[in-house]
Image (cartoon, rainbow, N blue to C red; front, side, top):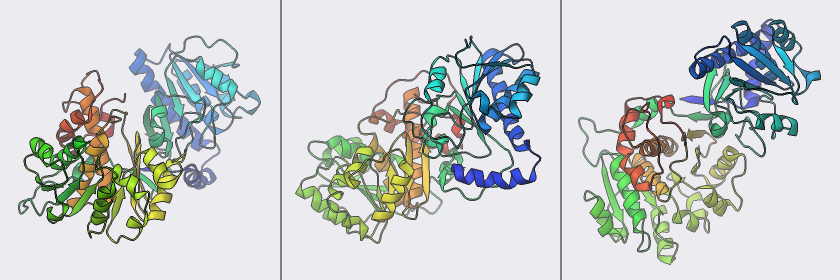
Length: 493
């Protein structure tokens, strides 16, 4: 499990080290890690370090110092280095002399950059907020070389990952001492994230992500004494005459995800059974039988009959996942879930979140998810490339999908079926959501790659459909149960 720490938490962890270590020692630890990653990137891209050229974008503050020290180390390894000082009068007092003493060249933002092999972004650090200033934005816009960012891409908020103007889009980001929320929530700008140890002592993180091994270990598989009932029975209420596919996809995902039993209640029994004959299907909710969890909402409509069905399901004493049309109905009567004693998991995208609350999630998606979960006494999965999962008590899971291949019609129906089946197997709602979201995103990536467990193979990618995603779910689970690490997942879109 990986933890993500806010800027304030990191600064608090740095304080005792800064007080106990010689002046500048902590910065040089960070710079050494940055230089090592930059050197590895140069070798991978150009075949070496000596004789290559790097440009360092230097702002005021410690990130500029980190970049200058790292460049001085690379200069000693034979790389030619130029430092572009965005605020010369505020350049780091120790880093700049070290850089020039190593033979580095100093330039102004208006100077010709040439064609460096690599650029190091040291414009702003975790204290920075807002987009790049115009001079920095113009400089970054001229860059064609791959960028390695020091701690975070400049212009991206460290705690929310939000981008509200010009920002660096890095090929690699070197995180100093701890992962920050930006590394998951703003992953599209971070590129590959490399964590370097600088000796921080950190407590429990308020935001966590499950590794592949965590997901694989949590996935329910049949034991020696299990039968179809003991492994969890999930009930699915999805689909309508106008949207039978929602019932097919949601139920099919539940069937694929676990080895228990799936019951379907709704008007699409023929379509569901044609695709998944192992399902026990009925058109009458009252005849569905006992379940350990319910999934309700995908494609079921928002008429009075659907409203009565939602109410009946929420009156049960088992965990319930509400998605899609169920969320639209729930927005009219939040007390249906506020008063429940059993767990409820809501799975909105941004538009459905706005329907529930009256406002969109805004730039701080973690805070918005936490607030709704606490206010409504629910577990919440807020969809996105970085899916945010909040417990009523404030704990957050995040799943960075590695791409946006699952942004396709019906993919949410598949996700609901996966998570519902995991809840039926006894996994707590927030963890079931985190486990399910990870398998769902990996299935989408595998589908885009054309399948296969060899994630390092040099396949191209292509758009997918929800049906293709579902077809790759079993392979996704197999890969995760083998403990394949996040870095081995397919490349993003």
